Length: 190
Image (cartoon, rainbow, N blue to C red; front, side):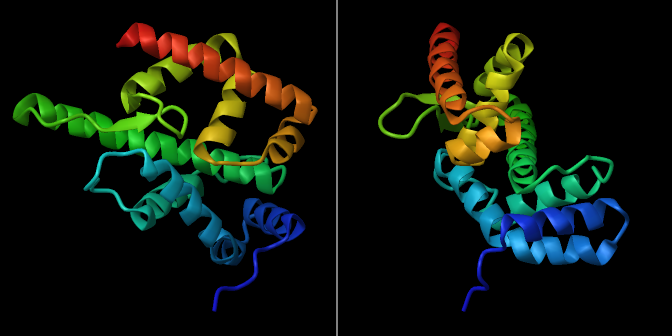
């Protein structure tokens, strides 16, 4: 039987204790958020090619290890943590794709692809998406954070609004704008 999902307050308290140096809080945090992290990892891997060598469990563990190294982060709340976890997972996948591309040049393997939006969108190379999102973030940093939290972490609009301290309407508008911008940018990369 799965433990109940932790409340946002429980996660925030564990994050603050962990940041304060309580190593056991970090262990309790992982136990509390593992199921959600695994769901985020599964969502991110859903768009990858079949037979991807990274499994959700490995992605969660790699991302969590990277998050452990970021103890100086001022964790605001649950949404902030999951947003950063999603970005970290994105970085793990990008690093994995770069390593795979290096092998591709030697072995001519396929590059993993990721769909920009579920439901029939053309597949997009993960490295192209990463480059486009980095370029987007230079001009539109808040909107890029919305993409990271919505697309990679699958956070709800209200959670993103809370994390970014803006209205849900603003987040919805940012999400629509970002998707249109990224589609146009990625269409030019094809």
